Length: 113
Image 1 (spheres, one colour):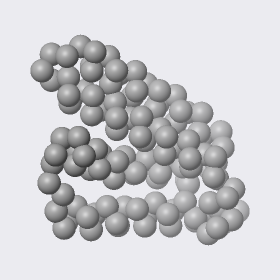
Image 2 (image 1 turned 180 degrees about the vertical axis):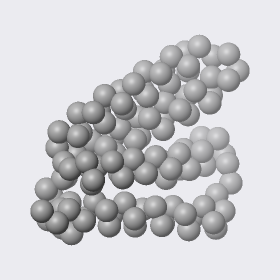
Image 3 (image 1 turned 90 degrees about the vertical axis):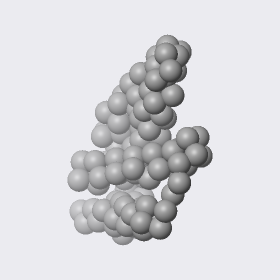
Image 4 (image 1 turned 135 degrees about the vertical axis):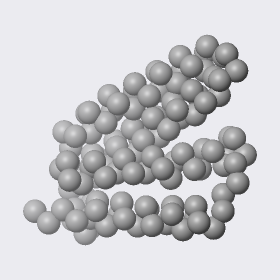
């Protein structure tokens, strides 16, 4: 498991950056619903940066390891919704976050080559 994480480390880190950019871009889209064009444009910019980083990340790891890293989007989205939008996070969401997190770690560490 550790060898897989080391071997794909750069790709995994880039995929996490991609996820953060995409989630933040989507948050700005949500915040732009009152007509704020700056938030809308910033959202498109961040989402686009996330997509470009994701494409670049595929150069540094196996697809079967890196693609599931995008599941971290769900975790980052819940964290941003809680911090910025003041949404409630209940026990089921916490359990879901933990399941996703451990699943991503297991898949990231599952490169047997």
